Image (tube, rainbow, N blue to C red; front, side):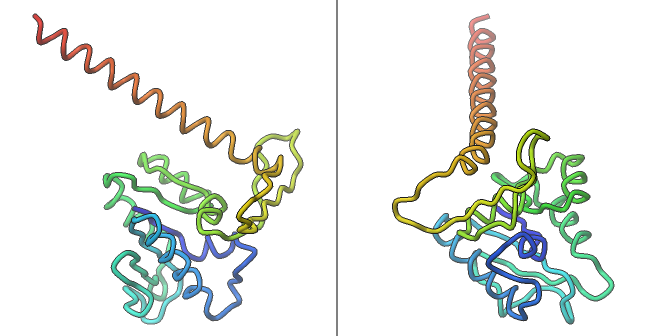
Amino acid sequence: MWLIDGHNLIGQLQDLSLDDPHDEAKLTMAIKTYCMRANCKATVIFDNGLPGGYSRELSNSSVSVYFAPPRTKADHLLMQRAKELHRLPNFVLVTSDRQITRLAYAYGIETMPSEEFALLLGFRPVELPPEAPDKPKRIKIIYEKDPNPQVTPQEIAYWLPIFKRRLQEARAAKAAAEQAERERLRAERL
């Protein structure tokens, strides 16, 4: 289950612009396509909708689209929904807004940067934030949908820490499960 900060994601893309009057529809279409391929669900929240609330025109069975009503920030709605949904399996909040990610961390909510999610959708992120001062300040990853892609050193540098972190988390979870099983078996023997 994805909870997506819609306008934050659009602002991180080279392929879409917040100035485009159809940017929400274009992003929603890409998310619908991704959810259909990945067999998952998503909720997208955008700023400044009139009158606000659920959008029947942009939503379908796998993607729910909401617009924040006037004088209400989408950030508030995002955190409210995240608090309601974060116990669902595979729940991830997609945003690059630092204030929201700090709040999400405080509530134990898993987050994914908009730039990373953009790559899953097949979009090109504007730029990736530098991870260390010794790395170049601007790294651009261009996703060209080539059937035989050439992986650049920048792409490897971007993805390798992510895969290593997830591998470590999986190994730690497996070790904890094995330890719990050993303890359960030991308790049964006594």
